[in-house]
Image 1: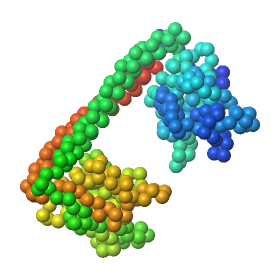
Image 2: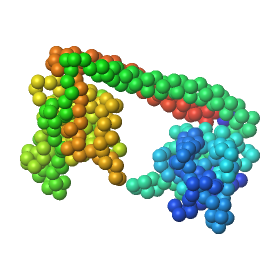
Image 3: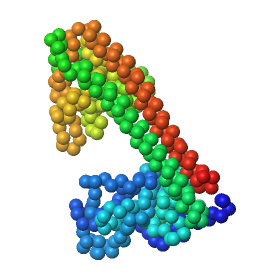
Length: 401
């Protein structure tokens, strides 16, 4: 019965409630005592991060008078995303400490750590945390405000019952989520596999050409942002974030635009062109324009001549084998980047006959539509499973489970 439940502040249900230690980069090492950081803390999940693990020496541990943490302790991150995410520390077989932006909770005997762990995944808890955060550019919560968050909990026998029910439910939903994520990945791989198979075995009436031989190649250009006259709604101005933004080669056109005067100092890219991001973490991302656009200098473009089926080159440049060529030819100083000269000299192999090019595009377009339908179904199922989890948690802490 809910009437037998208690509500206490988070800091009042802990034997230990403190922060981790301030560990500077110079004090970190590749072996010794394991340093658990905010990146290890997921919503109810400990993320091991394997080879990215950080350590400090025993000497540093003693010099800084670090607080050792133990399996069964709860860590709460006071940084996004989201603020307040928590997990129970597993036994990883190592001596451990944590960083200053994690709060350490060692609960008293009146509340089960697993119950609190489940509560920190509920919307009620996360909403309470959000109300207690500070900061404009990057939200965070102080340990004092975190300690003031109210925690509802029933008598111990009821806690055990609730935890068991939630364990059973979430074990099943976790399996369903794993299967759905696997199906989602399989649908993406199915399309890539079919794409590869179409171009894997060229025949005698196929040809190999460099991109520069297929049509016009350009690199985008950004008009001076300080001149407001250059920006308007005359033509869409495309940045890397607008390329393939829905995962099917589509371009986001309405986010930013140039005026007619802005286009005169920029570069016009005709419709039915292929756009590829050629710098940074998203290098190799490909899109296909269905209208005239302009773009910035982080994007290289190919406008095939009229004797070709233009969209075929979107598919060719989307292939993983072409991406590998791009990466191989890119410089790797600080950010991967491939200049226009190297990019336009990369080659692709394709049918000479326009009719065969059109037939390939028709097949790929049809399969792409069906693949996206499957992906939408799987993504919706993942969303439904997440909503189910939140609903079950709400019922549990409303005393209705």
